[in-house]
Image (cartoon, rainbow, N blue to C red; front, side, top):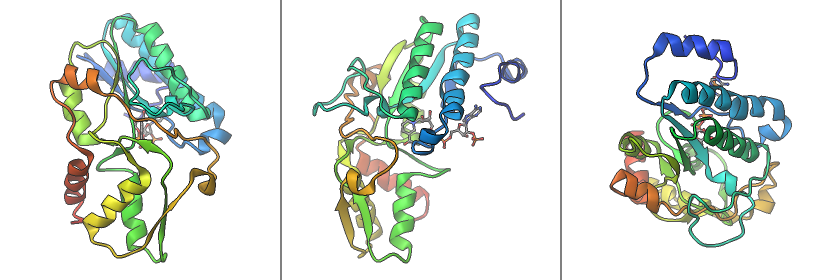
Length: 252
Ligand SMILES: NC(=O)c1ccc[n+]([C@@H]2O[C@H](COP(=O)([O-])OP(=O)(O)OC[C@H]3O[C@@H](n4cnc5c(N)ncnc54)[C@H](OP(=O)(O)O)[C@@H]3O)[C@@H](O)[C@H]2O)c1
């Protein structure tokens, strides 16, 4: 049954039809980071209103809510050290601000039964992602691939995250989850090219050269210690995750 999380009655009907629930994982969001700058209302509707609706229901029913958030809440961060979950949030841009507001609603409405898991650089089967975009660019007609080299983060392989979230039963609070190791997008793209054994030139560029409408975090490297401890193991190194993903897609 299709439904709109931002429509309270449609959500209530869906929950009544599909319950009862041990816990609810809320990953839906308006994720077009640049498009959000000109679609503020739509973005607010999905990232804040829909999240508040779900959090209200979970708070009332006592069902644990796992809310997937983002490293973009640190878009204005200038400190170069691994960021723990209680690091000051500095959201910049409509997407970042609305995801942060979504977090705030979850904490207010489910004070005792929420887990907020911030992730960054999500990739995996289905949908669009950075790895797929670089593979397509390497196999496409353009003579070179230009990739930003002044944003440092960690990346998250969806199947690894899913396995870890299954272990997070009973936790409450805010966590940072990502595969091990920090990298720039250019370094990630180079690793993808190496895996494909592609000879195509790859050129590092700055965020200013790319000139996108929404700001990106310059440094959003997570400290994942509390998540790794709660789960019982750290997510594997990103190069390992990348190789598994590219194999699963049949690119290697
Ligand atoms: N991608 C990343 O690198 C990244 C990084 C950090 C955090 N995250 C977070 O991870 C989560 C998943 O990201 P993603 O990139 O996989 O997202 P995605 O591919 O854009 O998928 C988002 C899904 O949310 C659904 N949705 C949006 N608004 C809805 C509403 N009002 N009611 C019902 N469904 C709604 C969309 O449905 P339609 O297709 O029908 O619109 C879509 O299926 C998001 O919470 C995002 O903020 C992503």
